[in-house]
Amino acid sequence: MPCPMPPATVSSPASATLCPRWLARSVTGFTALLLAACAAVGPDYLAPSPDDLTVPADWQAALPHGGSTAGLEDWWSRLGDPLLIELQAQALKSNPSMQKAAAQIGAARAALASAEAAEVPSLTLAGSGSRAKAMGATGATSVTNSASLALDASWELDLFGSVRRNVESGQATAQARLADWNDTRVSLAAEVATDYINYRACEATLKLARADAASREATARITEGSFRAGANASSDVALANASAASGRASVLSQQADCQIDVKGLVPLVGLPEARLQQLLDQGAAQPLQPALFEVQRLPLALLSQRPDLVAKERALAAASASVGVAEAGRYPRLSLAGSIGRSGADLGGAARYSTPWSFGPSLSLPVFDGGAARANVRSAEANYEVALAAYRDAVGTAVKEVEQGLVRLGSAEAREADLRRSAEGYRRVATATETAWRAGSESLLTLEQTRRDAISAEQALLAVQRDRLLYGVALYKAVGGGWDTSLPDPQATTATLTR
Image (tube, rainbow, N blue to C red; front, side, top):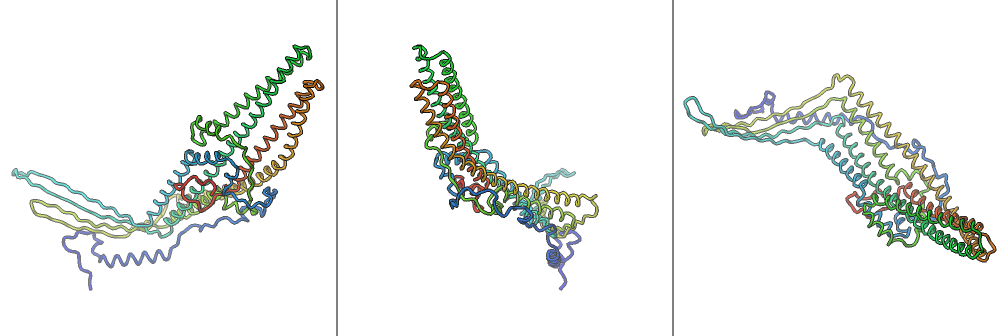
């Protein structure tokens, strides 16, 4: 049966004389044929293989955990200081770096939503109305009311996968930003722990310096009394006073170092300095206890353990998809557009309305652009190579950090026992020498020398104990900080530091 002509009240372009149903069926069939024939252009992403990344089969450094099966999930709590956990949680809530990382996730997800919106048709509804009054040559007036309502639709068919590749890129970028957020979380927790450990070690050193200064002051007083009694030379008094002054100066220097450590913690945890100092004073309890954890025996596990490597790999996937987007720009683009509306006017009680509509495809075929499209492809390919090099470099750096962390931690553990024996020995010597000096059988110079040796040994022990903790934190971070790929969005609780 022939297609009926549209009613007289319908105004349409010349192409509208075709049967709308036949045209719709034809365009639908043509679109289905093109979609079946065309696939997304550009490379299909494959993650680099371990052979391409030159990841070693096993760690070259000795593993310090000695077969321990303890994991990272509760590592911070096993250090034995609740205040450290509290400060880390406070930092995660208020530190600007966490807020920045969360905002970047939101921006990436918004960009992904925009890319996904291109997969569906867009609809626009527009309406207008007006009322006009006019006076004719005879002086009579007339009033005209007019109104119109139109619905426009458009849809670009994704013949060569430009939209699909763009969505792929957006998804990978959003995943990379989420991994960045987790990397920031792990790094911030480690940074707070590092500064906190340095402060606690500074406190211990300050306590040692104060005890030493008090001992030197007592020696100076005894020496002056003996000099007045005629038992010591003036040179002994000068030496004792110089030693006491040196002890006081060491205390002042150590106090300044501790204040600097506190000021470094303030911007990390986001607390006023007075409140932070109050917490630190209240939380000055037992020293932190070193806590070992098992290191994965296969370095390949780092690729999924470390959030920064996951972020680099996802950035590589996004760069690969961008090559497809650029490649699709060299191919034709087909769009469908349609419009239907209702418009009319009321003049002196006589209404005239019409229902115009239109529908048709639009084909855009690049003919000559001076090589711009090809240059865009080369630029996208170069960006992919940059991302690949960055990923390889990050993998190498991760393996290096773990290897170095294992060596440093193992060395600190081995040195601590010897330095403890050294400190105990020098302490006994200094005590015996002071007893002999009081009895008059040892000189003040000998006492000062043994005292310096004892203080140096105590400081070396404190330093290696601090380093053992710091190396543990660095290794914790190097192996991924207990990051779990199932971790929820940043909007979820931030109190969980390691899971």
